[in-house]
Image (cartoon, rainbow, N blue to C red):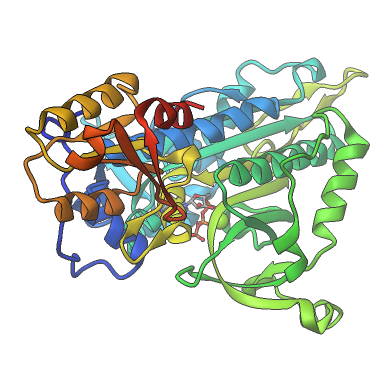
Length: 437
Ligand code: ATP
Ligand code: MG
């Protein structure tokens, strides 16, 4: 894509309303545009990142055996009256009345709806276990929407729901999601620490929040520094390996990690003094096991192996997909702009033509662009080099190919890695070899 044809609006000035770096950079790099308080339009570069994050989340859900569905954003109020949450949810719920005076709402989460759908089909223990998820916009009328998409009112969430015959079965489903979450965040280059958490209005006893450590986070957290060295990328536990997954779960959760609400001074005192870490974090995921809290009132019941009725055990599992885009920037930036990790970058390469109109420069740039038509942005604007460098650093694609008249005459490209600042001069062929590797 040529920059002269692209819709990639960058801002030089720092927007006054943005208090944290990810919000500032998302506005300056033209990723999002606020349309009303806490509600954002996603512009091309932002949307590409959002889609990549979403795809990683999807692949790890699928790998853990969950199946994707898509439920609507608008829900009927009567489902929530059945579970008893219609009144409890309070002002965060956006309530809507349709032309027939029917009470509707913009879904803040989907426990009721999925339970109702599943209830329509499940009749026997053979229909269990199942795990269904969707990636859909949610609306919560937050009192103080702030920090851009970090705490929006409309936001994209992945939410999964598990149904099991027994409590043991549902704990296994919980652990499958636990591992899937660690893998998901690791693939994005993020270290997310699972912390024992409060369950809030969703209910239940067993719950973990996945928190990325960052100074701008809204949660206060206490954790064992051993988490910093853990790597679960290579964890090869099969989905159906009940003992293996339990072992993995127990090993990870034996290390202390808790949010402020769940902090336990006595247990904390037992952690090696040198390993105690206290800080701020961003909640990017939250998983809950809540037994029959929804299946019971919603009337979900199946025939068990001996024919007697059983109320399935449930859990729900959320990931803040749009919040993750901001969290990724909090974790990956410098004073000049964003430094996208490869896995989620909107485009892989910026091609910087330092002298548009110079035959050798134009030819080299065109060659690179033609080799990576979907993964490069070609800065073909008639702008000064300084403007191009600044915009490329701000937008933060992982690679920059810098092409000036002197190098171009010798068939050379300067390749810069945005994350580290490393540069090297290469022939176009070698540069492409590296980029397409
Ligand atoms: P928070 O404590 O940050 O208000 P929550 O505990 O109410 O979040 P959950 O119900 O656990 O949120 O939702 C699952 C995930 O959705 C959260 O872990 C978070 O990543 C994301 N999320 C929740 N609220 C918002 C919001 N207002 N804007 C963006 N993402 C959100
Ligand atoms: Mg939560």
